[in-house]
Length: 111
Image 1 (cartoon, rainbow, N blue to C red):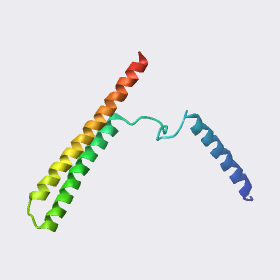
Image 2 (image 1 turned 45 degrees about the vertical axis):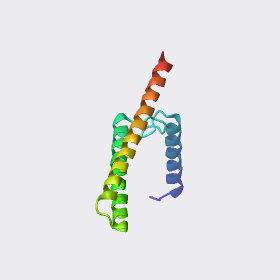
Image 3 (image 1 turned 180 degrees about the vertical axis):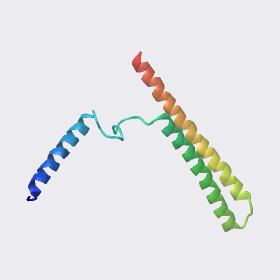
Image 4 (image 1 turned 180 degrees about the horizontal axis):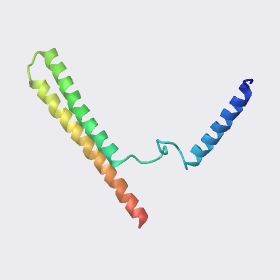
């Protein structure tokens, strides 16, 4: 038995062409779904929650750094916590409003 490298490459090339054509049709784009699929509600909720936590933590870290730099005890830490919390809540409200607007546009398009 002889090993023919060209046959393996031709077979691989055929399979790749077939997979690419199926992927471009969108009929079977793989396990990840299509690239233009809207994010799920759970994904949006996780994103908002993580962004809220990051804003609060960032406010705490910056407040602590300012406290250490200025020699004040909890003043900048508390201000940083409040600013981080306000920024996080503002971001969550902005994203929720954008999602609501998208839902309303979709409903008006259906009617």
